[in-house]
Length: 74
Image (cartoon, rainbow, N blue to C red; front, side, top):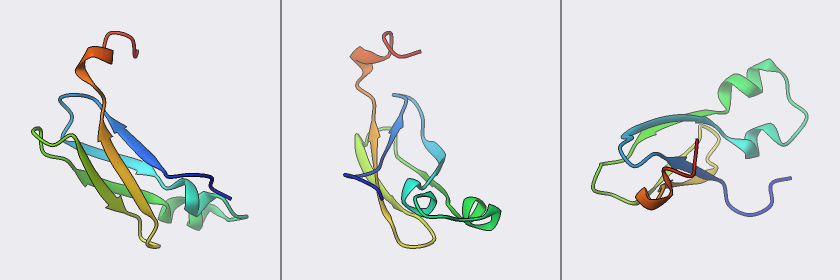
């Protein structure tokens, strides 16, 4: 069971992402479920937020990390 929204966090200069949908992996699945849980997309450099949808229709929020935090995140 997934609690709350899923969020993919992007670095300040990132424009593309590939991640795994946690909602797809929350049940008892097999390797095929894991491979199908991948979600990819893009976010323009001038955009701070966006969204993505996995193959099964789960909504995923995409957000850019604040530039002031980049030194703290490694």
